[in-house]
Length: 160
Image (tube, rainbow, N blue to C red; front, side, top):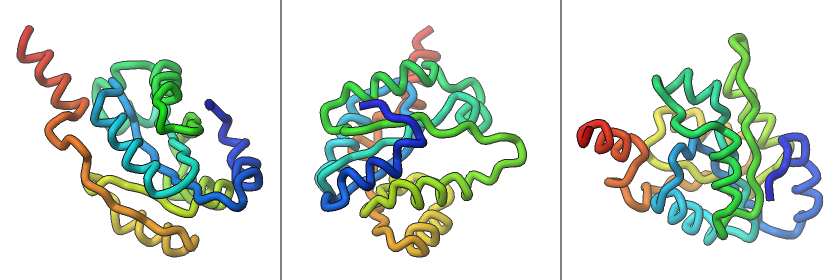
């Protein structure tokens, strides 16, 4: 179910006796690797909540991306059976601190488990924030490391 950022606190209240698992990402060109990642995440708890990155933030980190607009990516992630709830990440303004946004999500949702893949660049920060909020960080490897959105894009470019 697609929810709004403002609904995270209500979600925690609704599932106070359930284990909530949280993960986030761009999820551009959703593929089997993403579906298997969500399936793996879901095994760590009862409710899986996914934060889908907004177009603005992705375009600032990945030139030429996203391929699919945020509305399509959000709806696609929502259709995957392992995902219970998903929401669109807030757009970061030029003077925003992305770390503050993670803290805001942690304080609202208060997930039991935060899952990150081992290919992120800011793992030390993620460990610290999870620890500071009493959230268990689980670092996992991508389920299909050879299948990435970037590799799909590269193949398409090469085959032109």
